[in-house]
Image (cartoon, rainbow, N blue to C red; front, top):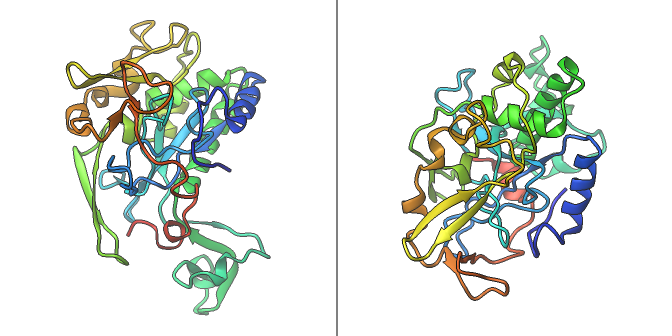
Length: 315
């Protein structure tokens, strides 16, 4: 569930509900959105995180492509995966990324999705020892950050199964710190339907703290101190640079074990100059804008789950 951002997360009803759940001890995992290709505001898809993924408490997840292999060495970001920072509050999102492209999973028996596209239908022969090409009514293939989110939810469940006393903040911090930081500097994807080519840069507004690594998360025994609030990005108009501000109660930066370099790796400094070298990205006309600037981007330009993305993915 989600919607475009129309106001600060402090006022957004979805964000407030998510925070209440979080503070009650529930790990809340949220899809980033599928608007990473949206350049309607001249931001190359930056500033397109949906609500409640813009809330600093929750774990916001972007989508990766496995490219049909078991190895993560050839995995790339899905170009449709929404990027931060968030509108209005400039929260650094997503928090991490996980496989979300062309994922095959269960489908409700009365779902109408199968009638939308034959591309994603799954034959019985995919998972049964049969030569029949009959179409299964139990499985379907979809793409999107909503497909990546359950990967992180499952990882959180495994952590809590192993250590039931973990707080939501400790789960979030551990998943982010242990996430893989190995990425290319950029990747290119071409939409097979439109022929449009998209270039993706691997910075903290695209991949967050990195790529979900469940094995590393389960092997870790570290307990983060304090909260795991996602930090805020601040634009310095004088120097044209962007820096990250951490909440004083947050685990990030409070010790060597939980320093920013451990959580985000080199992505904290990657690509800022090339992302924010345009005045189109940061404006000052919004109400409530200040010397740090306000990210200028249109609201309501797309739904949290674009049907076109869900059907065709990022092939």
